[in-house]
Every structure is written in structure tokens, then in C-alpha cells.
Length: 488
Ligand code: SF4
Image (cartoon, rainbow, N blue to C red):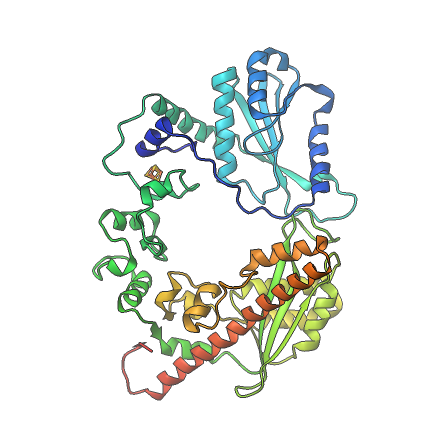
């Protein structure tokens, strides 16, 4: 159950089976390291441990039976939000400690901790005053042996969890006397935030796959207002709707079924692209507990790059790539290869370029001897996403997004990612991590899939660049035309 419950959800929860959702994506973490972290957490209060329970139900029942036994002691129990928590009593106050491997405190942590607190208060009569969640400290620099006291950083969530607790109590009262279901579900941003409602498909299952919820730069309330007024898809939204210029480009393009292009803005931006051009894409992995010295938790570690080099407009396109052998530290070798392939002049091109710039700067930090050329590369990197992010070019097939995976096939149908077994960055990270346990045939298949995916990403940028160039050239030829909007 969530803290905020609408009338429709209160009715569903009171009359129907709860729905259990699958767990989402987690960052990779070594099992052995997890056990070390668990031992550290257990050792924090080891000498005073009095009760131990294996399951959530068992622990709540145990606390309910003998809360007095806990005074002056501690209870370790399973929580809904993390594998292990400690409930204790110190200086006249109850406290709760838990740990997790997330990058920062999430809404889901607070929601679930609030539910725990609610159960403790309701079933056991315990009011918890202090709630602390231990998470990896992003500033921790890895070196062996790990000092877990420094690796984990405490986050005091008392205030935000208590805030949600009040709402859970209210929701609980409503569940005891569920309101009559409204004639129409009171849909709104609450259906998707802070977590997707358990009953989303029942209330919003009628929405087409590409609905007004995909309208970029329109706030949540406004999107749901459009749905309530019967506008389900972007092309149904009238021109008179006061949404601003940005979403209206999307609406217009989808209504007319063709791209909307501001060719002169594109032409001006492309003046920055000086040959030779290096279309560069990195794949990275983020470890919770870094595998190599000098890395921090969640710091992106590049494991492959794909580079297409174009020396002049009519020159032969050349491709280079590198995948770091599994289990090895390939940072220095990768830096050396890039310096050997990328000259001191020309521009690098990346999609969402800040990421590539950051990786180049990190490689410079890790390879001091190559610092100068790598930092120069970061400075010379241009972002091919800008024309799409700024809506100088929008195609209906982009479906409100300006990600490479949407833009590339919209401009060139041959650039299709859907048939690939590695089709996005997360797949690539997961596939790379599998290499450590794969046999030879499996490794070959994984490396081929990674190679194919990386090559497609940098090749897609070449195609997009050429398509933008063609549009800009057309605009320059037809200079007499006063209009800035152009339909290819
Ligand atoms: S999807 Fe929205 S309207 Fe339906 S039950 Fe959930 S929060 Fe309420």
C-alpha cells in the first residue's frame, strides 16, 4: 500500500487482492561483498542482540509479544524495504536502522519505512523516534580492505518518514470504511508518482500506447487534465490549447504526420562541426562497490568504445572499437587507444555529449601522462542531441522523446535497435557483467552482441549528422523562402 491513496484505490485495496510488483533494475553488486556489508551491519549492535527473527511477519509478531524485552536491547529483523534492520531502544527513545545499496534515499524507501513504522505502532505499540538509512557514500574512494564504516553514510529519514506515516494512518482509516468508488477514477499525477499505482492498468488501461502522457515539457496535472477532457493522443489536442511552443511542435508534427524542421537553426549549429569528425560512444558499468582502486561507488567505469572517423565529407568512413577484457582494469589502455586514434584537430561528436565528456575527463584523471590530449578531446566534443532536444527537428516517430533510440530510426528506418539482443545501455552493462561467468562460446556471442550494439550507436550518429546536413543545405539553397519552418 502507498501513503497517498485516492478513493478509487481505497476501494480497490479494501475489496481486492493486493498486487505484488516485480523488482526493478538494481546496480550490480558482488554477492561476497554483500555478505561482508551484512556482517558489518550486524556487528554494529552485536553485543546487545536479544531477539532474532527470519521473516517480516515473524519479527512483527515477536516485537508484539515482548516489546518490554527490547528495552535496553536490540532486535534485528527483515524489513519490507531492505534485507536487514535493527530496532533498538536507547536513552528513552526507539530507533530504527537499516541499510541498502541504492545511490540515494528513494521515495520507495520512505514509503516502505513509513509502512513499517505504522505496523510497529499499530501492532506493537512502539513509536519509533529516529530512523536512519545507511547507503553507500558516493565520495568514498575504494581501496582494500574496505572500511565499511566509511563506505556507508547514514541518512536521517525521521522527518520525511513520519510525514508519510501520518498519510498512511489516514489511508488506513479509509480502508476500514472504504468510500464508495467514484463514478470515474480520480486520475492524476498520483497515478504515476512517487511510484506507479498498483491499479494503473485498471484506471488508465484505455490509453493508447502513445498518449498525451508522452507530451514533453507539459506538467503532470496538465496532461491528466487533457485526458479528463477527452484528448487521449497528442494529435487530438487543439492548437488553441495554451501549452507553449515546445509541445505544440510535437502536436503539430503528429497531426500532420510529418517532420517539422527549423533548418536555419540546424545549419547554424552545424557550422561548429569541423572535419575530421570523430563519432564517439562509450559504454560504462557502475559498480556499487568499485572493483579497482581509486574508483568511487556508482562512478561510471568505461568498458568499451565505438568510434567512427570521417576525415572529410566524401572520405571513407572508418570504424574502430575496443572492449576491455572482463575482470581487468582497462582504463589506461582505453585512454592510450583513444589518443592514438583521435588527432589534435577536428571535432568529436556524441549524443547526450556531457556523458562522453565526463568519461574523457575521468580517463584523463586516471592516465596523467595523457591528460592534455584527453582533456582537449572533452573540450572539442559537440552534442548531436541539441537539434532534437531544442525541437529544431521533430518527427512523429520520436513519440515525444529525443533519445538516440527514438531519433535514429525516425530519421533512417535501417537504424533499428529492436531486433538486437543488446539494445540499450543497461543491456550492454548486464551483458558485459555476464562475461565473467561465461564459457568460450557464450563469451564470443556476448562480445559480438556488444560490438554490434556499440557500432550501431556511433554509426547512427553519422547517419543523423548527414541527414541534418542535407536538411540544412536544402534550406540554404532556398534562401528566398521567408518561412523558417520546413517540411521535408
Ligand atoms: S490509478 Fe490513479 S485513479 Fe486509479 S486507483 Fe490508482 S491512483 Fe487512483
